[in-house]
Length: 215
Image (cartoon, rainbow, N blue to C red):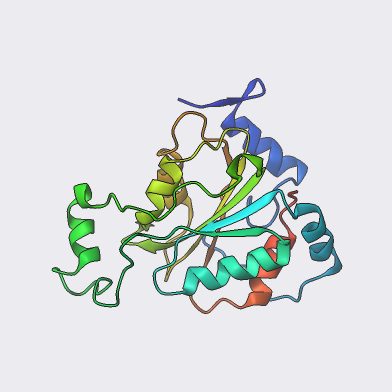
């Protein structure tokens, strides 16, 4: 069932955003594409000035790849940064996908084990943010499940959510759709988002966020 936004469905709302340029490059581009490297431009500086105080970059990162992208995005936008942190962090052994007995492998095999307790679910002042950039790695083709508790535990009504992921090849699209379905009540307006590989440069991230008309 589609959520209506100001008299229109969320699908119509996102179509309008793409048509008017409200979400550019990352939001309306193919989710599997990574933006080309480019230095931060004067438009990025303008965006950062406008976005400061209204944008939150929230992320979960197990190995540091997603953290690096999130930090680069937050710096470029002048946005606040929030880490989605499990009470019990994942160790290297936990993330050994080749070991069926590892924590991540067992959680993947048994969905009932994917409820990961977080140190903090709701960021301070969350209601004041208009836009949330939500970052996470892809595990087995889906969003890393520690992100689930953040989405399910917060109210995104009236917010625009721009997902981004780090992965070897999986696009952001299906993972973002799965997260959106977990939001309780009004899920807000979710853009298509962007995928980055582990070797993405800060310049590529800055190029992406400079094309997001937010703030």
